[in-house]
Image 1 (tube, rainbow, N blue to C red):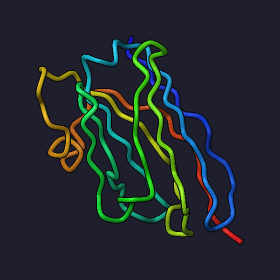
Image 2 (image 1 turned 60 degrees about the vertical axis):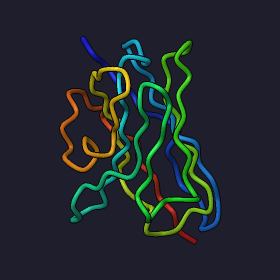
Image 3 (image 1 turned 90 degrees about the vertical axis):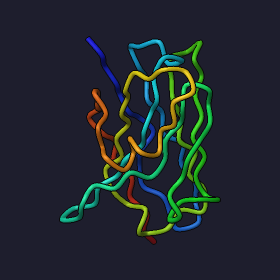
Amino acid sequence: QVQLVESGGGSVQPGGSLRLSCAASIILDKYIIGWYRQAPGKEREGISCITRESATYYVDAVKGRFTVSRDNAKNTIFLQMDSLLPDDSGLYHCAANPAWPGSACDEHLGRGDFGSWGQGTQVTVSS
């Protein structure tokens, strides 16, 4: 069983910060990890991903404000979110897919073709 469990969501004021965690039952250094979010009535969007080698990718909407990282020893992926905006609100999911060494992650992020998905954690940014 591949299990991903997100946590760390909550309610925060604009300009605030949150750190999301994704606990995994997999060997993280053999997977690429993606982060997605979806607001009610909106299409799901991929926002960030990280490769086996910890190379990272961000879409323009979050670049410079969000940071994805991984702690392979703890089987955990993190998404640090700073300078949060109301438009950042949504249900955040992590996703994992096995990958060969050297594989990029941005194409997977755009296609959404990850084999495993977490249940999501809610982020609300409002005054």
